[in-house]
Image (cartoon, rainbow, N blue to C red; front, side):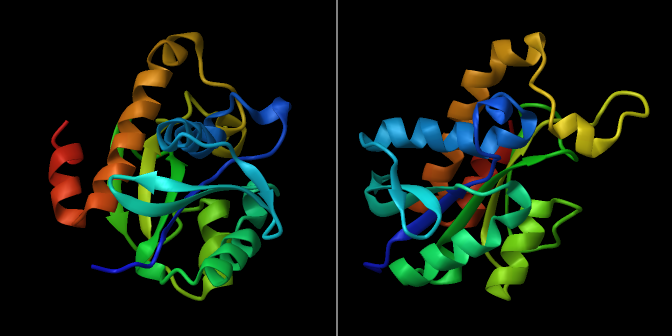
Length: 191
């Protein structure tokens, strides 16, 4: 059993203007996990707000980068180096346009699919083989630009299910911490 901590990063944009945006789904899930870990996020020199605790019986460092989404890589690399976390113990929680609203999908590696936060992390780490918890936000309606869509708040209808969906995504993170990936995928991809 490894004593290395896990690093769980939620992606989002800083400040109250972005708090309810679809792009901040990662921050929302990290807030749920922070509550479960029973701690408070504190400022870290790695340009992120960090909470160290235990989830699913393992040591976990929860982090929300303080910069904008497209600059997430620097803080993630700084935290990975500071806590000496191997890339296979890094989980990134992010919004995903290509899956329906509320669905949760898990995977290791892959491309960034146009997601600027993932692109920044992969570039900074020089490695794309980290775990991802993909929080479905669905496709934009009509001809709306995808970038504009993710920077809009969840709709009133979506907000009714948002807390439940954030809890499910937090459950998925804990399933990954308990491992293995395939078991977590079987549990969350079936629903």
